[in-house]
Length: 416
Image (cartoon, rainbow, N blue to C red; front, side, top):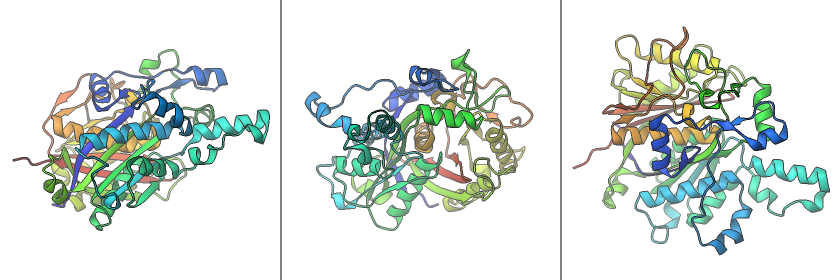
């Protein structure tokens, strides 16, 4: 078993709330966060549903907030807040670690797209003189990782990954590889996105990817359900602190779980549609299990990508049925029924929820799911209420436009 990567800290900023406990409570309660969004409505977006992060209270002295938060895109603000919580929950003090041995890896699908849209509107309305001097540092795709490294004083590898909706999971894989290569002792890894914008919402609507159930926002996001009609656009950030087990042991910290294996594949099939037989997802799953030294019949739980689109859920359900067969049915859940699709942050947020499920012996329900159709039948989807379950091995799936497939395998931590 290659369980040499310990998860020692988690931080979350999601539509369920700021902080790990707020998000966990919302997901376990199946409390959908989709609403009619006033910004999208004012802009005349064809779909106005969204899952927004609730307004955040500043976590710094007010004078510092006024002096610097305006410089950041919302995606970076979410990330900084989540990372502070993750580092603190890992029992780490950035003032006392060796900064050269700390890596920062951040995944994003769109970078600072909120800033880009806002500044482009200013350019069109008032000319170049109206642009903020912070436009490039706020929206360039690498800058979330750059700002976080500055915030933490981390001078080890600082990287940004972009594999669409798998970006956060890809960041976690990249961080694990850096740890195993000896390039760092600690990796602060995760994903962030703030794509609830008129351009992004309109573009996804044009693709036919979004739910149009605007008369009932709370029931709009319905992963695996027979009445699903698309995802709800969300935003947020998830951050994990990863360490080799020997480093965590030297600090006498108790891991929440281990990252025991991971797999990453490409479909090489279509720009936006998954492989119809789920070939890439199945290959990534097999790779993750081989790395973990485990077999499919040991998998107790799957945190599915589960977007609520007709095609994704059908393909994912087919892959799960074929991988595990009729004699073994891992429990399956999707957090997107509560949080919406947080894009490049989703893989990291859902990895964090998978770790919490293992550590707390609980699998959250799939909000919005009432009954399967013919394409999603035959898998054990947790519905209605959280399920007590002691899970020894859990997988987290993340898929992205371009045919990106990632699977993370987490195992229960050993204590005592």
